[in-house]
Length: 452
Ligand code: PLA
Image (cartoon, rainbow, N blue to C red):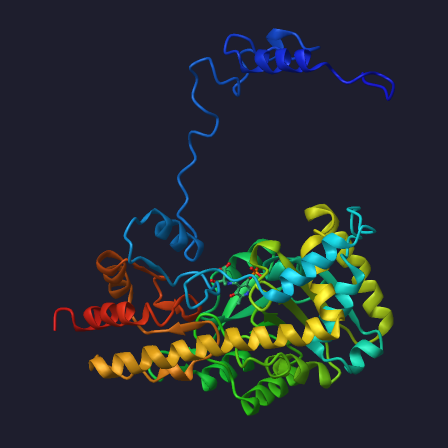
């Protein structure tokens, strides 16, 4: 046994231990007799089958698998419009200027340490995140009715919220829009909720199926949870109008349905952080309870840093603090506490007036470029005389266009044009540039006129 005084093993000894582990004829581990391990099903050198040999190969993820296929393609004209990740006009990933500045400040600050964060994450980050989504002057925040916990981006925030509800909420059914982001079903089902859907999109009008939505939520059992996309609905790019949100709110409150907002694109829909938070704020303003999952993946370009937050707005401060105490019990056995770096970047930007302002400009520039891509693609299809009404491309908002192209047309475009997108016909407008619009236009034209 090593004590604090004992010297660490010499490099030679470590090497010999390593060599013994690698040697096929010996599986002995120091301090253990050989025969306790030889012949064990996991020993690997006895010609026996793997204990995992029954495992069947899983399919790739419907969204992230598109990137896997794209990476394997060697064509110089290949184009990835699958995952919703922002690209510049040059087709390159973008690290925001403000993020670079914040990182520099963090590196220069010698007082910064790498200790564990609390289970709930970085306190400043949590406060600022709640303000960002609920509004700086939100009465709910002032009345201490909001608990916010830092989670692993949007996905982790949804999962923690789902786990909390499955353990502590009386109604374990969640209604998700049809269609929705593909991961929603799995996140909530694995959290232990029963997942049902409500009508959302009407393929005939390529718009909101408002009547269907009201009917389905109207017949949901009292207390059911309802997943709502705060803005820039994925994959359809179709959001309710302000009036429609108000009707949804009234219906949900009258039936005691519990809203769970997924806010993965704040600032990306309209270019304004406040406008894109309007739906959430309407539900908080009536004093009722709300859950919100926030992601900084898209609006701060922090995809791989995995920064997000779950806020639960409750009726009063006392309930709120009890809810927070239970959230900690949900988080601790999952990943103990969240990572420090990404949340520090966000907090640095949100609390500095100048950085914050600069961020809003960079965000607006990204949103505007996406909107320009919509116009360019629409104009190009019109100019080419491609059959069909393509006006939905400029009407839809956010990162994606739900083109209406079917599975076969998508497969054709991938095979013949090396254009990669999800099989439901969703394209990430953020992956498009003026340079690639003509190629996409040719592909769409060929796909829809094929066999005519
Ligand atoms: N919620 C919605 C509606 C999303 O579209 C996404 C990401 C998330 C949550 C989760 O994002 P995060 O965990 O990275 O914060 N959707 C992407 C990526 C952009 C993905 O599928 O993971 C998409 O292409 O749909």
